[in-house]
Length: 213
Image (tube, rainbow, N blue to C red; front, side, top):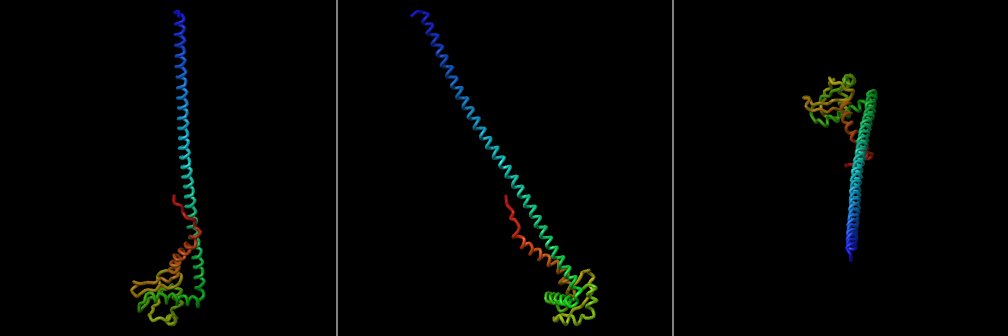
């Protein structure tokens, strides 16, 4: 084999080796590219999942805030309804009592009930009975017969009260340390509390339960 042939064979071997190296580098580059793309796609999916989770959480929080705001508004409306119902009934009661004062027989019967209740509750030998100026003028001349019709043993002294109330009695012990307020205002104040509790009990069945988040 001559020298030219040897050189040609050497050049061909070098070219083949170079081509093999190029092919190897290209293959490695393609593998790295595929790996980079796969990792990038995985990171993108993770990012999308995180963003989706964050958006879902934010949407849920917004929904909860809206629900809670609606429930607070509804509760306020229910409370206002309770209050309006109490006030309407109390207004009707006031009108009824005012009308009752103009019917002497019924009004005197109511005063007897108030006085009997106070006498039994206080259970002292002597009572001081306070009334407004109108009722004092009505009762002063018939006080003895009125007390006799009440059918209890305590002695009772009738006085005009310095307090301004629309009807009924305020009954005290002589030292004023014990007192039963059966004036219309006192009775209505006590009934207002009981009435409000009754209305609350009736409305609770129609009140939406509050959610806890």
